[in-house]
Image (tube, rainbow, N blue to C red):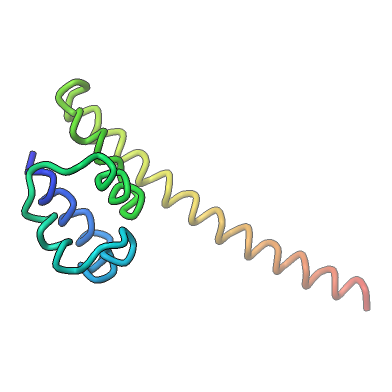
Amino acid sequence: MNHIGEEIRLRARNLRLGPTELAGKINTSKQNVYCIYKRDSLDTKLLKRISMALEFDFFEMLSVDLVGREKVEAAQKELYHLRLEVEQLQSEIAYLKKINELQGRLIGE
């Protein structure tokens, strides 16, 4: 495992979130975000804000030795796929609502 700052940098990059955007989400400066990327430990309050901003539980990542890296990675992959499925279903629901609305208009004419 990389140090925590590097893990945060990688997660932000994967989300296409630049230092300025992350700084805004955690109420700090862009320069401080660069400092965070270099750190190997963080205050828990700051780590909680970062976890919420990046929608990732860094506390769980840090406890990976207790559970086993493979189990955590499998759970993370499953969570990712479930999020994609939820997005797809939300899109389908919106589409079906439009169809329903259009059918209602046709019947009402």
